[in-house]
Length: 107
Image (cartoon, rainbow, N blue to C red; front, side, top):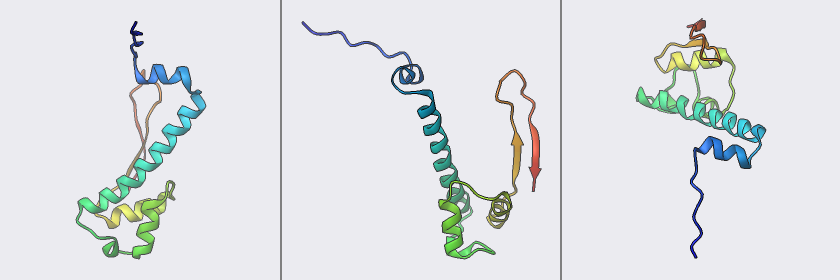
């Protein structure tokens, strides 16, 4: 007799049955840090700028910035400006009831 497989409802729902919320939250935070690193490199690459050509930064500095999971805001602003972009940092409500965003920094 063939055993019928239980159908999964959703990844998040089923994951919560097997893994603690703390582990899930840490994994999400780690993933966001990795995405941040990729986005910094992508930002520079979209402008066609090599690591050696970022104004005001050595190649080693650019490599370190792009591989860090956290960065000073002032360094981020300088790096983003050197890549030809502006920076805007917003505070966004966690709960969807209020969609009002607050701009904390526009540089």
